[in-house]
Image (tube, rainbow, N blue to C red):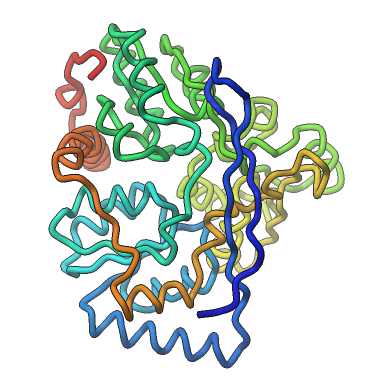
Length: 371
């Protein structure tokens, strides 16, 4: 295994009314392997994927090596929705998920008969950490007349308490359909994404108080200054960002939406307000264009992430080789919990599949209250 760097302390928000407004977690980021070790690890991983009948799914935010290796070996690099679909439908009996814990859990929920491995199972998410199931269940109980819609960045237990699971690529469409049917929404956990959806749809929504430590740190006043330095640049923003940052965007979208905007917009320069792991794919797919990180006020006292998730950074080649060698770090979900958590995920997947095919979606949105 590669040498690991000292543990990084990470602050994240707690729900409103908690004993304190922030809590602390940790991350450990693997040291970058030297060139010879890197080449050897990649070669070994390729061999092991074949030997174990395994396929990789990697998120856009993980290290470029893990993104490239997934695609080179017949796997996938994508957002959490496509990762979930791909893992469910692929013939491989072992899925290796390079991302954070909720992604591994979702893969296991959708493919309970498969082995699901993660390079580091301690890689988590501030939105997941900040939405513990007991407190969330009490919040749902206080609003029994609302459809419970939770973002994918949540634990299996929170998903099991929900009526709908959504990702940033489909949340607008699903909430708009719920609103059109007269349903009121309980949204969790990201308040910025929830606020964006409410502004776009006009839905009646109540919000859990959570935020992504990466997107929450983008600063509108710094972004305005950067725009002035690059007057021809278009601004691409993920909707987990604060409202004043979203207001400065030329395009707002999920990771897949940002990729689409960069490909289709008539510009040669872009400022990107999302995790800087996205820049690898943006630059690979658009070699003639320039991509600049949106500012998080640099290394100031308030910068928790500096535009990169410390937990996504825990995914490394050595960890990937280790789990393929040993079968360690297998994701386990209680079968009964998995069955309940699968219902709102399957509902989302059926809705998005119908939408993609241009089929009616209204019949896929039953009148349901809090679970």
